[in-house]
Length: 304
Image 1 (cartoon, helix red, strand yellow):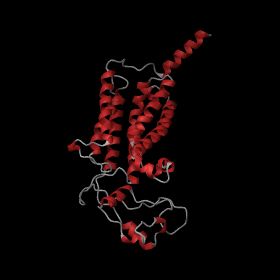
Image 2: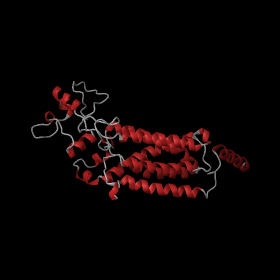
Image 3: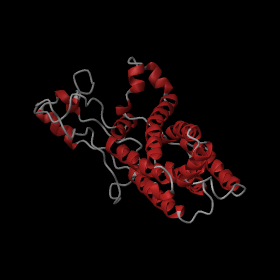
Image 4: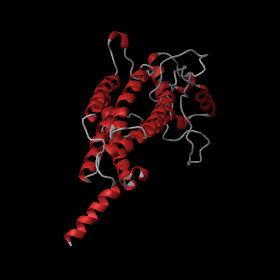
């Protein structure tokens, strides 16, 4: 931000680098976690690269995007702590958009809940595309092949059953693009069993943290504290939210945690260590952009 005394163009580059590296890291983490399924897939690399099918792990994106951005800032000889503080709230805004995508895709779903719970969410078996250009009467796109992740998971667990009219003679699902009008009606009526709105809770949490970090930016006593606060608060909230999700269930009372909960504990420890380390560092990460430019201009004039 310009009001922070730094170059907005640098932040744009940080955003671009973080986005590319973040998606690559998030996808890589998902592939590693589900390597057996990808190794058995007949499509090989095509499935690995098919990000549109879902499958991104936020922490994996952070683990790759963070060093890429840090290397860029060091290469440009910029005050790293100051830029990390500026980027902290943006990370949470980006996560909020990601959780909105999870909601639309039906992934990262919550655990089961009662039908009459006010916040219960029920996902469709298939989602209609917002725009379809092939001119067919069938409302589904040729690219619509698989049911939504939460619906598919509940079918696999026996919690819901696929309407009989949507299977062929061999028991396989009929492709949505080949549905008859009656099959379209059956698919439109098919819904998942009610689940907790984990995606919406994650979205609200990300926006709340973005607001807290933005407010704390004016109250910090040392540069770097905003990012350190993020590294403390987010893993705490993520650890709790993992207990709401059901896409990677574990038994917390038995000491079984999800991979994201283990990562949250590690990040929390790093955040606390960062907070303690900042107490021994100078309050400022270095001169502001205007001061650096004046210094460079003075050095140039002396050299001439």
